[in-house]
Image 1 (tube, rainbow, N blue to C red):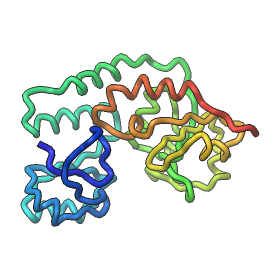
Image 2: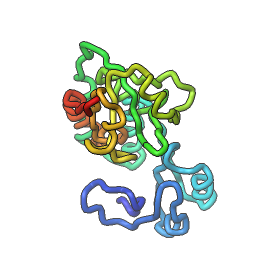
Image 3: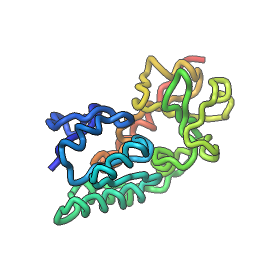
Length: 222
């Protein structure tokens, strides 16, 4: 049984559990008071100091850090087992089928993938979202960057010889009116950030939804 979630957890709709603050600065006293059998953490979203504090308080933790679709599916299967489920849920089986059935892309597009602006932050190498895009025929122009989330200026972004700009709606909410104007003349694909960056039930829908969004970019006049 789920007993708590962050203030920012939105799925499933109508989630009615105790809220324990944000992922970066959770209310640890509240978490401990809930007496959970397990706390799920993520390397990018949670701080090591909070993980250590929970362990010191006798709270079991499970830390996730998938950087590819197969790693995400494996970690989810492991979590389901750890929670004592009698078998894998249908959404996980559906996700496996959806990604296994994905055809090899006929062509490869080369993209920059901002995830924030003011300042600009983009996907670098070794990221889950980067692997998702690669499987959909989109090569990240910053895939070989030593930083996982580089901070180039706009002139550098525009000079990366990208034929596509991928703009998800989280963590920064890029929209048709906020983002494409910075890249005049270059097609911009507005993507669901949940399906690009989350790993869970959304993985079953992600291949078809993201492929459709990538096929329908908008272009701001040059």
